[in-house]
Amino acid sequence: MHKPKIFKDVINHIAKVYGNHPGKMLVHTGVIGWALSSLAQVCAIIINDKIPKEQKMFLVPQEIADAGVNIISFYLITQTVKGVALKMVNMGKLLPKSVRNFLAENNVKNVGSKTFDVLKDGNLTDDVATKFNDFRNGVDVVATTIGSIISCNLVTPVVRNGIAANRQKELMARQQKRFNTPADIKNPEYKPSYMMRPSIVDFKATAYNNMLNSKGSMTI
Image 1 (cartoon, rainbow, N blue to C red):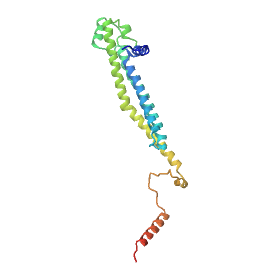
Image 2 (image 1 turned 135 degrees about the vertical axis):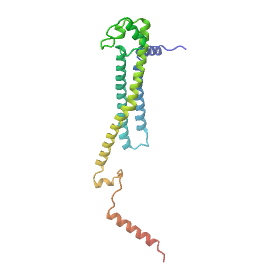
Image 3 (image 1 turned 60 degrees about the vertical axis):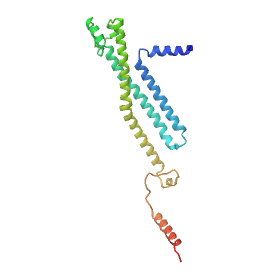
């Protein structure tokens, strides 16, 4: 099946950008996935008529804050873990046995130092360079996966719960400030989360109603 030229150009561009950097592709697709998922969640909250306006005012900013935490922590942590792992590979501290033996047999100096680069300074043959690149790509993927696990399962939930707790406290404080006078209690929107203390008027009204009910049930 013949593919349009625009598709070929897109495929070639993706291969050029991510062909030797599979970890970068995982990071970028992960960020895009987080963004689209959060956008869908926000839209679902906005168009849901069953959610009261007061709750939407809390849920929408909360979802946006969650999205920011998810994306930022995911990107920073995965990039950090991936960068450290690749740095160790490039400088020669983390290498496959075949590449390490080649460097040792050829008496290559400064392997493992901060200024050493295996591809530039190792004088690798084509076959050894291919093995090195395959190993580095594997480390790239593994490090990115580990970084995403740390971000999604350890860091993000803690930060997100802290932000949610602060948002909830702010919302409760605003609601309490909104209904802080006796006149506000008459507001139909006022729904206290505790039982109101009865007054003497309540007792009189209850006693009067009981008296009427008892008279109505008397027989002559």
